[in-house]
Each structure stands twice: as C-alpha cells, then as structure tokens.
Amino acid sequence: MFVDLDADLRLVRKIRRKCVQGDFPLDVLLRNYTEARRDAFLCHIEPLRDQCALVVDGARPADENAAVIWAARAGISGFRAM
Image 1 (cartoon, helix red, strand yellow):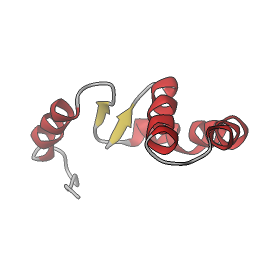
Image 2: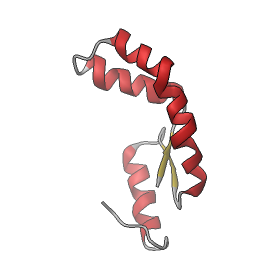
Image 3: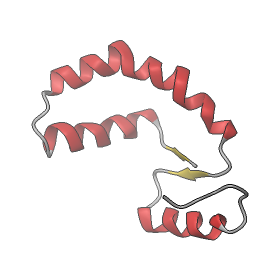
Image 4: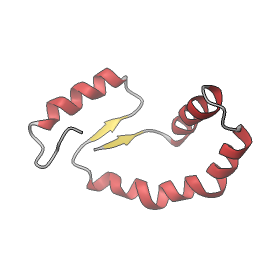
C-alpha cells in the first residue's frame, strides 16, 4: 500500500507533528528536508508507488482511506493488515 500525498502537505504535516506538537527545531527539519530528505524520497520511495497493489489518497480523511483499504483487502493477493 502506498499513501500518496503532495510533497507540500507531507512537509506541513511533518512540521506540525515534529515541531509544533513536539520540540524538534524547525530550522533543522527544514535543512534536513532540503539537503537530503526530499531527494531521498524521490529516489527511493516515490518509485515504489507503481509497484504497490493499492494506492490511497493521503489528502482524504483517514476514515475514508480505512474503508478503501478494508474493502480492497479481500481482493488483493498478498495484502495483509498490519
């Protein structure tokens, strides 16, 4: 399964989770993102999207995605709930 979400929304969610709700320094997070994380995602994670049996829209509400996942679970060979 691949959760597809635009890069800007991924970054906003990470900032909220790690810097606003947590205590991670924003400048460190942004530097890591621009110097390594963005390129690593594009090189190692994004190419896996086309190999996944199920792709869900990360911008949709979690309960809607959960329904899609559970509905697909029975029909996708090798798909297991974790």
